[in-house]
Length: 109
Image (cartoon, rainbow, N blue to C red):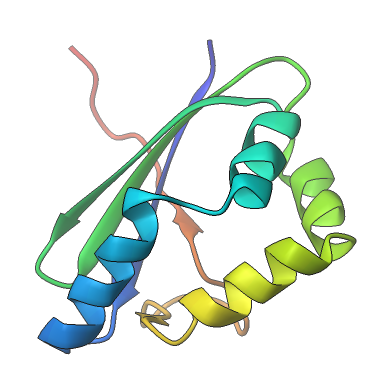
């Protein structure tokens, strides 16, 4: 099963970080549906300080292109993404408008 790892930073504000985590304790049903509907079979997000690390496991129907197209056409996903951007900030080397950045695997045991 393919796995992707992505990273993103949060704004360095303890109150905003706590609020962000509360949103993720119970994501909106439409967001859960958009994730699973895109072929993502498992997702975990970890945090250290302001750095987030996401692990996604996907099935054969998943592609970043398809997920992006689905999200662009989903008003509830756009509302969620706009809300989350209040808490998130791009990595220094992220492309303009890029949130989550795909990480390269450099080691496996």
